[in-house]
Length: 149
Image (spheres, one colour):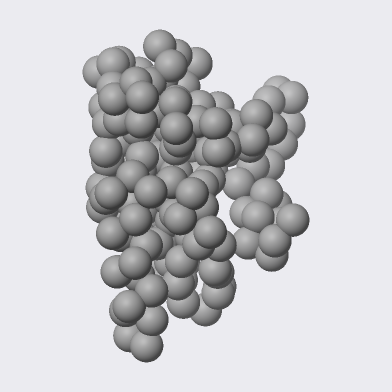
């Protein structure tokens, strides 16, 4: 498991004393940013998300960030998945796959600042057609999906 996935796994959820289900900070933040499902228009019950890729945002890495964004825009999921760079001291561009209970997916891009006082910002939400959803969905390991709430 790469360094970012280990870090993400440790910070994305913590146990609440009153229940066994983890309180997923990332899922809660995605819900806050989206406000409603971009696919079905409803709430986030039974919706899942998975961290898919990440790259560091820095002046000296502008070319790499452009590659990342271009691959996301062109739905080159295998290429997007190769981006697994993370540096806790730098802002990051993070890609998530979000699954609606109906099976369709949305690709989400988030700017995740390194400074704790700054909020994460959703910068793109691409609702995928069924064929594109399927192509992205097969690249996400079943164990990587997490509940949105």
